[in-house]
Length: 314
Image (cartoon, rainbow, N blue to C red; front, side, top):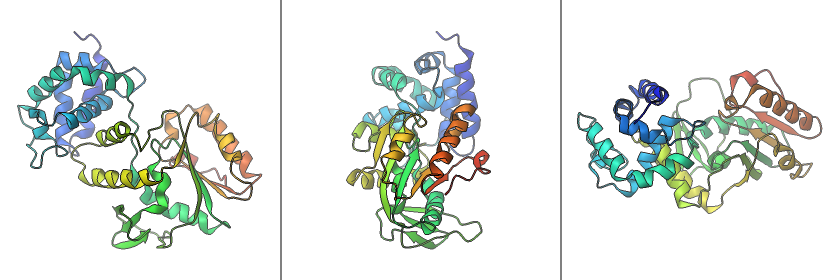
């Protein structure tokens, strides 16, 4: 049924990552790697995507609709008192996948690992506040690879930095994080924002219930704090969703930048996206941003260490 060793290898690799942080996903990955029928089903995931991650997210998403199956007993997102992983987990996974293969296959074939980790805003907030303090007037935010754009709402969240509040105090979304050192700008007066625009090849729509459910399914079931923050951020984002352009970050960035009035300062940023694109694209992107920064107030915040030597601010 399965003659592609790379599928088993993908599950084994993710099992090693999950060992410790997620006993449930570690055991699920081991079960899938050892089961020919599950491996055959996982081969529905296109070659250019993360097989194990998409498979687990598709199972998670489908389980939301069929929570009465015995597999749901193991998931903290489904069961109030989840059952710890045991020897019955593999059989439950296989039974679930056989019973609901008709729902799983379309998700395996079409969905991607388009996570939108809203907790990254805890790092973005002081960085964007720092940029805002250096310019005049509200900032235009432009995010590269935003998924559903939740981090474009960075000024709408409240933050708890080791007990120090910051951001929009009283927001429906509170993001807790540890402040390990330094003196970042942790203002309780969020920066003024002119506009919010994202560019993504395959954006998700916060107002689409299926896209919102997929965002939830991508988060590992036992990461309770991430689920809490994500659910609150989705509810908040639906009230006034950011603009997301479905396009290429290099080809479509100039049009987005030129649509913003010349006197409005821009902050272009990403969170762990650019490592996924080829070196030549990153180089051309850097050249494009520096070219625009010579003509107008523009700052660039990149979530990748290799961009640390480039200053694109004007």
